[in-house]
Length: 314
Length: 314
Image (tube, rainbow over all chains, first blue to last red; front, side, top):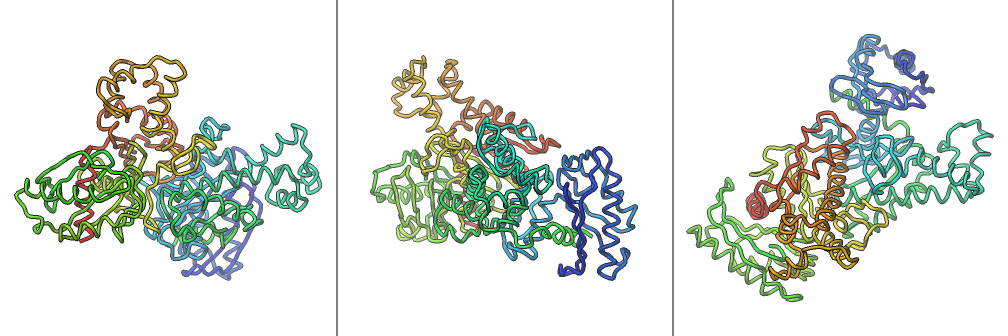
C-alpha cells in the first residue's frame, strides 16, 4: 500500500504468485476510509482472479509506507497517505473477516527479497528502497531484524551531511533529504530556476506529470539531460557512501537496492552506487563478496514479502 | 593489547577475574618481536598471580587494535603497533603451548560488556570505543555479530561529513576523523595555533605528555578551558548523531560508550551524546528504552571479553 499505487498478490505457502491486482491509490487527505474500502475491494478481486474466496486465505499481510506498529496494526504516521494513527489492521479485519497483519513497506520488501529475490538464503542482508523517501530493512542471522522497540530499518534517516538540507523528520542532512527522488526533484528544480537548461519541465508537461517520477528521469537520461545526469550522479555518490557506511558497520552478504529508479534503470542506477561503495569499504578484502544489486522482485517485492510475513505471523 | 598498554586477566569459566596484570606496551616500529615476547611474559605472570600454570589455561584470548583475522590469528594492520601481517596467534601458541584466539579489541570489549557489563542479557547492543581511533562491536539476536566476511563493527569509518577532514583510511569525513581523541587533539592544536588561549600545552608540559590524553582533557575541563570545552562539545554532537544513525538503523536495546574518555569522564562524556541522540531518533516512541551508557567494565572490558571469546572458540 503506497501513496501512488496499491499492488496485491495471492500466493501459496511457498510464495508462488496465484493472482495479481494493481491500481492507483485513492488518496484523500485526512480521510482514510476510501483507501481502506479500496484495499478490501482489491483483496476480494485478487482472490477472485486466483479462483479463491477471501475466507480461503490463511491471512492478509500489508506493507504500508510510514511508521506502523506491527503489534497493533496501527499506521501511526504515513505522510504519503495523509494518515496519522489509522487502525488499518482492525478496520480490514472487520471488513474481510480474516487475520490482517500490518508492517512497514520496506520491511516486507526485505522479506520478499530474502524469501524469493536477490537476498535468497543470505544470513545477513540490507534493503534500501529509494523513492519519494528512503526506507530500509534488515535481515540478520538469517531472520528479519526488527530491533528492541520494533522500529529498526530507518536507514533513510542517517545523517550524512552534518547541517545539510532539512529533512521531513526535522533533522538536517539525512540521506532521504539528499538522495531520495524528492531530493533529486528539488535539486533539478533549483538548477532550472538558477537558469540551467533541462528537458525535465518539457517531459513533465508532455506526459502530464506533476512530479519528477522515475519515468521522467528515465526519459531525461535518454535525452542526455546534463542537469538530471549531474543530480543523479550526486545522489548515487551519497547512496554509495551510505552503502559503504552500512557495510563497514554490518558487513552483510548482500545489499538490495529497490524502488522505482532501481526498477527502471537497473544497473544504470545501481552500478555507480556499487562502485562508490567498493571504493569506500574500510576492509577491501573480498569486497566483491558483498553483493550490491537491484531488487529482483521489483514492485512485487513488498506484496510477496507481506504474504510471507502474514504466513509467519498467523 | 593496545598501542599504549597491555592488560591481562585470568578468569574462571563464569568470567570471574582471578588475577590482573598491566604494563606499557613495548612498541618498536616495524619489529613485532618485543611485543610478542612481552605478551607471553605477561600471560605467565598473570597465571602466577592467580596461582595457576599456563598449562592449566583452557585457552588464551587476545583483543588487538586493528584489522585482524580471527580465523588465522593474523593481525593484518595495526597502525598503533606499527604492524602489518603479524601471525600473532601462531607465534604465541609456539611460545605458550596453549590455544590462542585473536580478535579485534572492540569486538572483545563488546563481548565483555555483553557477558558481564552494561549490555548484560541484551538481545541487541552496540559498542562504540572512542580513543586514538573509534572502534565498534555489535551483538544481534543475543550473539556477537561478525558479518559475512568477518569484519563487521567498523563504526568509526562511517562518513558523517561529506567531503570532511581526511581520515587515516583515505576517506573524508569519517566519524574517526571528526570525534576520536586524535581528531580532538588536532582541533585543539589548530585553535591554539589560531591564537586561542588554552591550558592544554601547559598541562602537557607539566605532566610530560606528548599527546592530548584523556587525563590531559580531564585536567583542562577542570580548569574550564574554553577551547577543550568547545572541541569536546563538537565531538559529542557528532557522536550523538552517530548513535542516532545507528539506532535509527538497528534499534538496539543498549549502546555502550567506552574508551579512555568514557572511563574518566563517565556521564560528563556520555550524557551530552545521549541527549543529542534522543533528540535525533526518528522514532521517538519509548526512546528512553534505548539505554546509552558508559562502559561498566572500563579498561577490563576487552580482557574479560577476550577470555569469553577464547572459551567459546576453544
